[in-house]
Structures are given as C-alpha cells and as structure tokens.
Length: 93
Image (cartoon, rainbow, N blue to C red; front, side, top):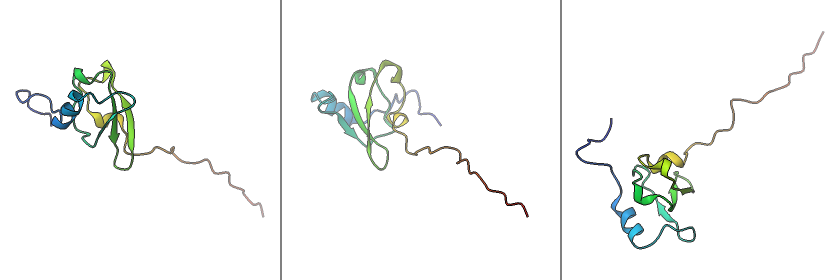
C-alpha cells in the first residue's frame, strides 16, 4: 500500500542532516540502514553505502533514481543461477 500523498515522501531526517554537513562525496559516502527512504532530487550526485542486511553496497545517485527507494539498489539476495547442468552417465547392461 502506498504512502498518503498529503504526507509527502518519506526521507529519513538523519540522511538530510548528513547531507547538509557536506557528506556524500566519493571519499565520505553516507552510510545508512534506511532502505525505505525515498530519493529526493537533493541526493543526485551523492554517494551512499546502503546496508543489505549483511554488507554495505555502494550506490551513486543519478537523476533516474529520484522517487525510488534506496533499498531498490542494494539487493538482499544473491542470484546463483537456475540450476546446474549435470552430465549423467547411463550404464547399459
């Protein structure tokens, strides 16, 4: 279910405070666990480290990402393929 339009988009206050301090460049990315924060236009061109539950994933914000959530760009599951091809030896008797 979507968030009410009269409330506006959810952006974690701690992220905006860190952004106002001047963090977010390549040398000092903003480290966050707030995967549900939406990306406002002020985040464009900034670097984030988004936690996926195990490690922090580096995310660079572009204009196409505005309106999406930070967690969309840090996958939590590792895809390893749909199965391995197993060569079976058939013995004839």
